[in-house]
Length: 260
Ligand code: 5RP
Image 1 (tube, rainbow, N blue to C red):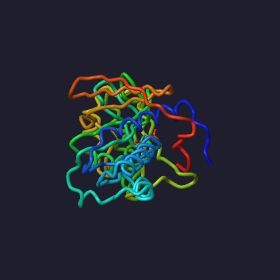
Image 2 (cartoon, protein in one colour; image 1 turned 90 degrees about the vertical axis):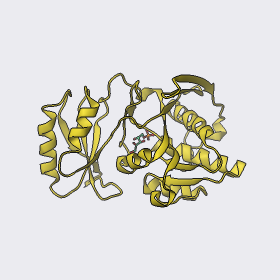
Image 3 (cartoon, rainbow, N blue to C red; image 1 turned 60 degrees about the vertical axis):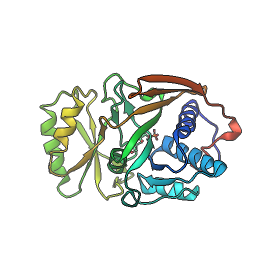
């Protein structure tokens, strides 16, 4: 069943549509995870069909792999693809340096591996996710289930010495069960409110035994495509130092949220 497009849906759709303009024939692409990434995958598949593009795609989750294959895209493991030209993914927060918090969808580990194996990472988002300082969105940290309570205690202890404004840690749930990542791990969500030094925090978290990866993406994102509900799209390219604004036109009948 198709639901009507909300303003947030329209903004995400506009960003997703615009981002696939950066794709060129023959590219090896990383496909992100989440609702905005799902819209991008649909728009990408439509472009590949219409223009006969030959693309090799690497998915950042089983969810995205299933969708992309269902849409007719060729999906291969990262080890087969090797280095990627471009990864397009969503984010939970981004700041002026294009530092990100990711992992709201629980796919941060594969997302970080794929982004770091790409020449370029483009983030697609709506304007509500821009922040001055990261941390309003709880920071996801992937931990192995073995001894996770002691891992949590050690994270709590290290947060005491970090420049943050909160220390509450919650294990993510999926209904009555702990949420499990594609790798079978748990996610701890850290309510920090404000992260003063993201680099120091990221390095410290990854030193804790049991921590697999954290959701801070620092120095990985090259450009952000910010969608607005009226179809305006702003593209900020960090390396080129440019900001471009365009308008993406879409009809209500274009609702690509159907079945997603
Ligand atoms: C998944 C992610 C997503 O990119 C992030 O949660 C944004 O999701 P959405 O596009 O649904 O708002 O990091 O692990």
